[in-house]
Amino acid sequence: MLPSTLGLFELSPLAVGLLFVGGLVLLASIPTLQWLVLRRTVRNAWRWIPWNMVAWAAGILWTLAPSPLVDERTPIEVITGVYMAAGLLMAVTVAAVTSVPARHVIRKSMHNSEAAAN
Image 1 (cartoon, rainbow, N blue to C red):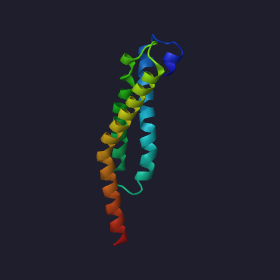
Image 2 (cartoon, rainbow, N blue to C red):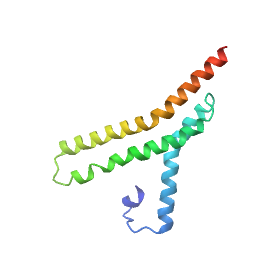
Image 3 (cartoon, one colour):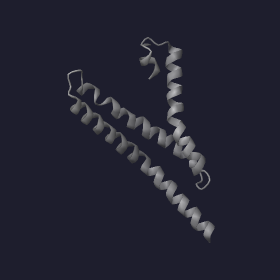
Image 4 (cartoon, helix red, strand yellow):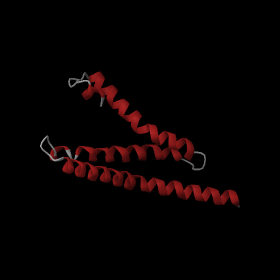
């Protein structure tokens, strides 16, 4: 967001590369912290990181969807509704993509708990 905020629309290839790497670091930040907890109870918990990154990368695309539908004449009620719908679709996308690895993590965690109890 910083380049557009500062009015830097002409970006060098180096700046584009740094923005790309920064975006990946940002996408990896939350699932990496979650992995620190998951690794205690789930083998191969590192797999959560790329799944979560893909989920958020796909979900974030919904924030672009309302742009063609709104301009300076669009009533605030419409803008609010369109962006609320985009936010809901983002949440559904992230939940759908992460549901597969989350089920795997839960099953592994339950299996490990049962094995430890026996």
